[in-house]
Length: 487
Ligand SMILES: Cc1cc2nc3c(=O)[nH]c(=O)nc-3n(C[C@H](O)[C@H](O)[C@H](O)COP(=O)(O)OP(=O)(O)OC[C@H]3O[C@@H](n4cnc5c(N)ncnc54)[C@H](O)[C@@H]3O)c2cc1C
Image 1 (cartoon, protein in one colour):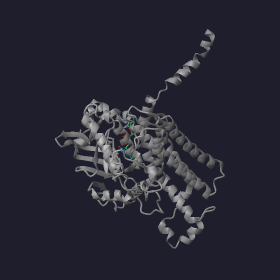
Image 2 (tube, helix red, strand yellow; image 1 turned 120 degrees about the vertical axis):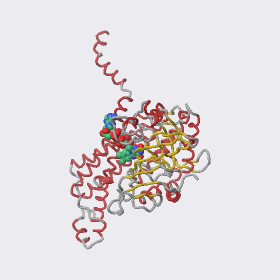
Image 3 (cartoon, helix red, strand yellow; image 1 turned 30 degrees about the vertical axis):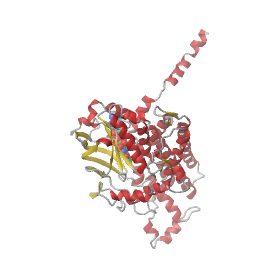
Image 4 (cartoon, helix red, strand yellow; image 1 turned 90 degrees about the vertical axis):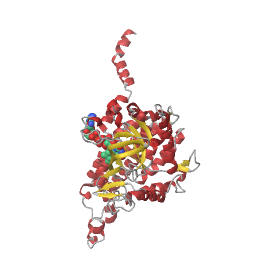
């Protein structure tokens, strides 16, 4: 089939009967029209349409090496710096569509999968079936342009002990049985952003390390979301109806769900790793998956910070505060962040090298620093919007107010320096959707945690980063005089 259109995606969404729970309601299909999902489904459809837009299709697709069809560029296994830049351009186009507010444009997990498949030999080191499985799965997803979600983390019951020491050994998703048909899994995982996907990847954490006791919890596989026994329990919806009132929440609520495996059978040909704790601990690093995901995430972070820079700049112009020094300083700090993030991405591409699987892989150092930095700085971006907007964030008539008799007064009293009331209200409602609304708060939580617990990610960075050359330099300085004396 190749790169699909929005219609292809929407048609597929309604054709698989999946089990989704939201606010006490059980949905199987009809997600296309449900108020919690329809806007997001249409935003996703738009992303797929972009691939087929004649003006952009060259940047969004490439020719499949197996079918000769045009397939999504995020599946491209980069062999050169030029390939990396092609991937970069495609990712930026998708990220800009939502101002970086969509974490799960398809390229995020497609990037992981293309890297995992490049390292298929690693998966097959103990069981050759898994090598084939991972490669075939990648080709299947690429050729059908299927949308992925994923779940990596055990339920948050007692973090003081591992999954095997919880009050119930099947709280965390665990192997129950192995049959001719496949492996049976029972228990739960969290969290799966975007239950509107076609397939779910169930993988080990990218951050946490398992021990030998965790073998029954160590697996990797991909399944249709519409698999018997697979249940998604969604959080309350933040999707809003009015695009005027909530320009972001009315388009981009991706949803997040806890995933329950009620004796789900994973067919043998969908398994990539089984009871292999060592491989589970290393597969993202060895395959380069983590690097390519971080590359995508940092490009999204650039798009998001640029978008917020646009918002705060417009707020400053609109209410005439742009000449105040502290306002300029606050906005200048966002410029510093935009340029720092862009430089990190550029550095990672400039220092890219072929890895052991022949894949052109960005240098992880700047990406790893950037993916640790952004969760720490994103809350400041929301704070700047609040600091510059002040009570403007509460002077927000709704679409219904705008259509009511009070409109005359609104037009008079909500006008800004050079901006009519309606335009000012639209801008400040957008600002609220970033800095204040449920949608905006979830964005902050997402940035803090989606890539892993920031505390343990920083610990990993500390342990992984080679600081020895700098320690040597210090030692050199400390003993400089000794050397001079000797001479
Ligand atoms: C909006 C959102 C979307 C997400 N989407 C996805 C997704 O699509 N797929 C997916 O797999 N995951 C997703 N996640 C989950 C994400 O991977 C986790 O939030 C992250 O790994 C942290 O795990 P946790 O939430 O269970 O926090 P916990 O591990 O429970 O941490 C809670 C607190 O305890 C501290 N803590 C816990 N254990 C330790 C320890 N051993 N040492 C030090 N401190 C500790 C943490 O620092 C933190 O402050 C998402 C999360 C969010 C918020």
